Length: 225
Ligand code: CTP
Ligand code: CA
Image (cartoon, rainbow, N blue to C red):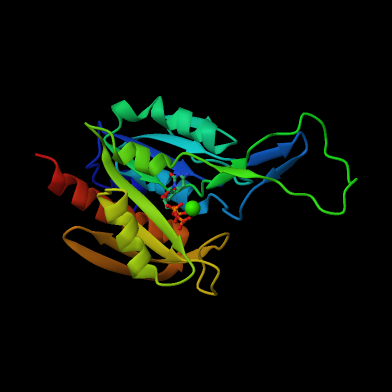
């Protein structure tokens, strides 16, 4: 069916989505990054928009063009992403954290390009804020959906993140495997919430995002009075 023909159950609702990787500077020319392509977050933003939502997309640096959204916020670091999210979350009805946020950043950013003088170089890292956990800890808060990227024990790790961060839903994907995930066109997901779970088989990310958004909308509407 055409996007325009779809029912618009999120008309008048605001959905905040994070996408892409973050970059954590080491010096003026180098950074620590990851393989996130932004595909899943962008596809989710588009799927929420197709259901009538006002979408705010906060994204790290990605090569692909961003979808048309109500507000596009381009950031680089985890701290910038955190600030951009916190400045906008109070108005959000749904928050979806699809970004691959760097867990750590260099403790110091060298003012000048680091020269290759020493045989070994040690870069000390400090923890970044967990944006998803910080949003979930707010009261009041939006309906909160997280992702979990795991290389093993998918369900156990996802359940731990669902409860540990106090999320409404978590979408877990196996990464570093042949089945897709990071930097891949296809993905499969195991989605968990307090009352149940659903598995989506391997499929192209736009299609997967569409089906995941239907599930999020169903659970979100069931959770609101
Ligand atoms: N996330 C976040 N801010 C961070 C780290 C992660 O918002 N600083 C979000 C991601 O967007 C994702 C979820 O938390 O929705 C889980 O990310 P993941 O890397 O799988 O889990 P972590 O909690 O970071 O734990 P670990 O990397 O140790 O598995
Ligand atoms: Ca992490």
